[in-house]
Length: 251
Length: 251
Image (cartoon, rainbow over all chains, first blue to last red; front, side, top):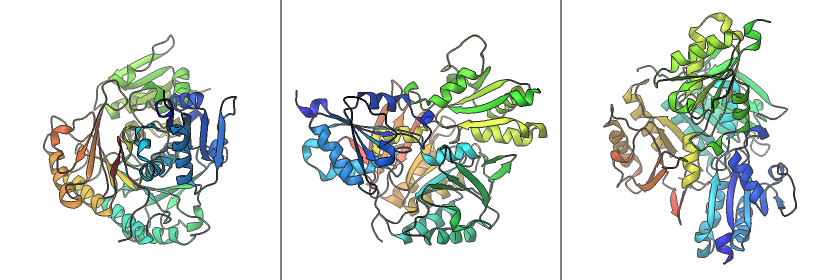
C-alpha cells in the first residue's frame, strides 16, 4: 500500500478557546493523528503523547504549513492541521486548498477532510445573546489579502442590505486606523444608535464583552483578539442580553 | 431559595445531524437538565433518562416553546431548549429573547445561556471544501418573517459586494417559486459560471452534495433540508473540493 492510500490530512477547528466547545469528531482526529501542524498557540492546545509529533509554526506561515501537511500526508502520515474556531472561516481550510492547487497533481488523490468547529462570531453571539439571529455577514477586516477599498465597499453594501455583521481581525498594530474608517461608514449608513458589541478572547478565562452604540464606539475598543458584531436597526437589549429579532419590517 | 435562583434555560445547538458534532458543553447541559423542550426531531435526538422530561412540539411553535421554557425555568426547572445547528443562526435563540421581551419583568433575572453549535452552512462548507473561506453572508430565504422584496434586495447587494453566500430554508412546498427568482438575480449579478452547491441532510446518513454552476442550477435542486452555498467569482474546484481563496483581486 502506498503512502497516498494510508495518509490523510484533516483540518480541524478547535473552537474559540474553551475546550468544552471542541467536537468529538475533532477529538477523534487528534487521537488518530501521527502529526499535528499549526500556529503555535493552537498546537499548544493539543496534549502531547507518544507517537504524535507536534509541528508548531509562526503566524502568517499558512501556505508553508499547508504544504508541509500535504507533503507528510503524501508520505503516509495522518496529519491534523489545527485551526482556531472553524477552519472554513478565515482560517486554514482555504490555505490548504491553495497549497493543494499549487502542488503536484498526485496530491489531488489525498484523503483530505475539513472538520468544522465553533467559529468566533457564533461563540461571541451566543455569549451576547443572539445578535446574529437575522440575516448576517462575516467580513475579515484585514487588508493583507484584499484591497481596503473592497472592504469599505462590502461594509457599505452590507449596511444597506440590513445585515447584522461580524468582523474578524478588526484592528492590528500595523493597521490601527482602518477600523475607524469602517466605524465611520457604519455610523453614516446605520445611524449612531445602532448597537455594536466587542467580544475579546471569547470563551477564554479573560473574556471581555462590551456592547455600546455606534455613536459611542471607538477604534481602541477592538484589537486582533476581538470579534466585533454590529447589529441591525432592529437589534436591541433585553435585560443583560443583546439580540436581533427573527422578523424584519416591511419597507 | 426561590425558583428563579435555581432554575435556568440553556438554548443548545445539537449541530446539523451527526452526534460527533455535538460539543461537550451541550452534552453537559443535557446531563444537568430536568426538562428538554424543542421541535420533535431534535427532541428525539436526546436520550431519555429518569428525572428528565421531554417536551416535543411541532414546528412553527417557536414562541410558545420559548415561553414554556421560560415559565419552567421561573418555576425552578433546569431547561434545555434544543435547536439544530447553532441556536443563534435562524434558530431558537432569537425566539427565546422575543418571548423574554414579551413576558413578565421577573423573567429578566433568569439565568439564560446560549450554547453554540455547528451550524448547517459551516458543516456543509466543510464537507464541500472551503467555499465560505472568504467574506460571506447567511440569508434565510423564507419570507415567513420578512417581505420577499427585502430578500431579493439582500441577495442582489450581497452579489454586488462579492460575498460568498449561504441560504437557509431555500425552498418549501408552500413557496416553490421564490428560490427560482433568487437564482435569476444571482445569474444576472454573478454570471452563469459561478459555482453553487446544494448540501442536503448534511452529515446525516442520507447526505447529498451537489455542486454545479448558476447556469445549470434549477430550483428543484433545493428543498427545506438543503443548505445552498453560492461561491464568489474566485470560487473554484480543485480535485473533489470546492473552495474560495482567501485573497480577492484588486478592482
